[in-house]
Length: 358
Image 1 (tube, rainbow, N blue to C red):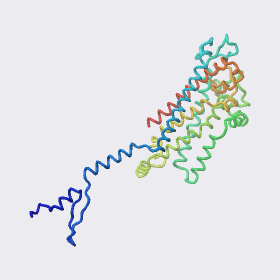
Image 2: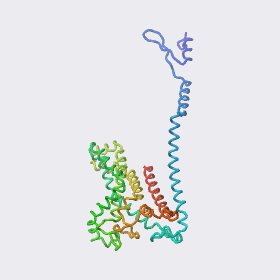
Image 3: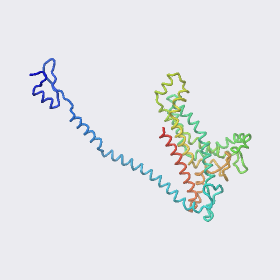
Image 4: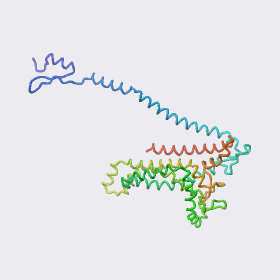
């Protein structure tokens, strides 16, 4: 038999998908399985078939998830439609321009309805900006400390303590701001007014709130800053701790100090999350009602002074609850609620866009 020829039983073994290997010691042969193209195709087909099969638990979970997402979408759309429908008739009866009229609201007489949002809009924005200017740097310092400087044993207790600020009811903040914080700041406000009273931000008018009570937009902004502080701090901290350790170790290996590591690595990595958390805090500030209702006295109009009173969208709606027996009069305030709804939606959309951009 030629060397390159195989016996008949060898050919049969090859056709069966195995090869025969000789045992160098005993001289016996042993069949070793060999994967064929037919076996590979069968395995791929089985895997594909298994991937396409949905178990009952998967179907139930997918259905519930889809229903939940659809439900929240329907609720938001329903709220928006409700606000628009209820606001349509009052806006039609309004004798003034809704976007430019800055006088007092007159909604009792349906034949002479006059109302507009400039005062509410500027007061809401002013108080919210004050809160952001105070809360953002403080929250940034807290987030950096908890993620980079604090001992591991103190991180969780301190983070829990800060998060507890978000659990305090709004009315408690309002009582504290009106009874404690405002009077304590009266001397500070008088000192600012003594040298900056000619400036529009620190000007006091004859019908402005007294410094003795400390009730004004600046006090409201400080109280609101404490309320949104845990939102910004928690969001920023969760982003900062996700900084890749390799980048931090590389910076330290190059001789960077701890502050340089934070400035060149941690802050650039978590900047978008920090801004997004600030926008979420702003959305929270725009809709705050009870705390500001108790801290900021009602003012005649927005005059640009931080020592003045005023009404935000939320506090104006809350203070006019006695007029809600008349659907048309209530619709005038619902129109203000529609503007607040759209404003909050825009702010939260900006925050989501910042997060997605990262």
